Image (cartoon, rainbow, N blue to C red):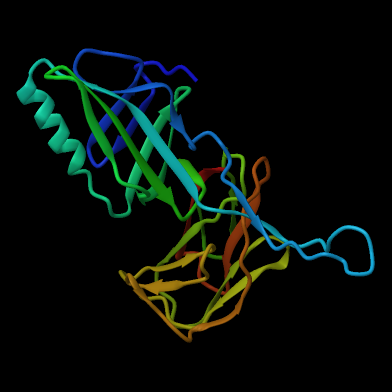
Length: 257
């Protein structure tokens, strides 16, 4: 796939542009691999001993691996050396990786998957490079969609991605009694700890973890039903058994695979 200068990969403050230039890092044609593709799948293959075929076992996505390769151009040996040092100093630990492609920007959290390479092929002028990142969460994320409703009401949750999305729910206000988060199709999360002014509660529908004032709170949830919002659909989420002066805010990223 040929890239344009508007196609960009951003990692740890370093930008890799599509196309070709005279100064900086440029991604070669075919040098961006693993971002637009779906990750490999993983499953357990179990033969039916006394019949045809296999048992129908679950299929899940594996990790996403992004590889970026191309050329680094410089106007002097000193500048090429500075680019080499900046490239080698990219943090190998988990961090945000942004990719602008086809006019849209998505991101994920990735860490170094293999040793990076920077090899000079035209002394003082050009070097070939390659780096890779491994994303244990294989999904790509785009725009953040935020919606909300007062206590006792529901709000409509949606996103524009192509995969099921989880949401982060934030509850604010004051309530000395227990309250309930209402999800789609009868799903509910029973919160058995007071809501205090200035100390927000957050609930992650991906992990089922409740935090109070930023700290994880254990042993205070009753029934817990998790859910996702599927692409092209709307999900009703609300906060019941509480006063209308309290507020529910729902944040959902456009989610892609």
